[in-house]
Length: 99
Image (cartoon, rainbow, N blue to C red; front, side, top):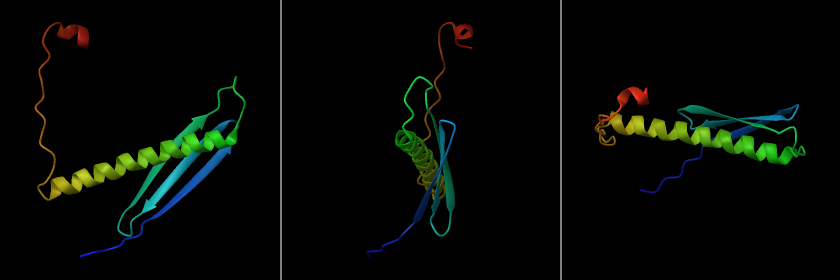
């Protein structure tokens, strides 16, 4: 059973005073997720807006990807197919030094 689905993704970039902010919105038709990213130009570096766009957009897409994977994990868990629960390990030694 072959099926094709199209999801809309929109990427918005805002630039002001050496800072680029990105917002990426995914609309699946039944769900909407928004990722955010930011890039700042080091004052000692030459300002190249395209690089700020690429970094901010990449970070927004990475944020969106993480959200999408968490939604999928929740959906899998909801149907009883979630990942196995990892055993929590107890720390040994100087536990006060780890606090």
